[in-house]
Image (cartoon, rainbow, N blue to C red):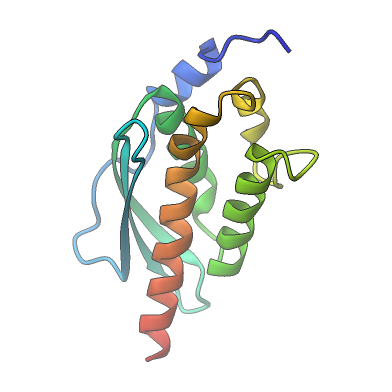
Length: 145
């Protein structure tokens, strides 16, 4: 596939990240950093009474791919529980590693198809999904305690 790595849709998403403010007292918060490029994403979450994400806050300091991934994650994380977020994270990781035929069931991830051969870019694409899955699991554990 000869699609450009940084296309118009990637750049549009990178410029339109929702929830770009940290939550004041989050139930769960995780920072992830890519050792390859230095991209950094912090995700805060609050859960509702059913254990689903009710609020997301983020601080994103990443390349365009990391920013676009954070935008896709945040646009669809509210209403999902920690299991669903872990499945999305694991599915994204498997797809990027060539262990799955396609992206997980998460809107928009097919946009990263041109990045598949660029393994050095995979960590920044995974950051937001890793952070939200861990933050939601942390929040769920703290609710159960």
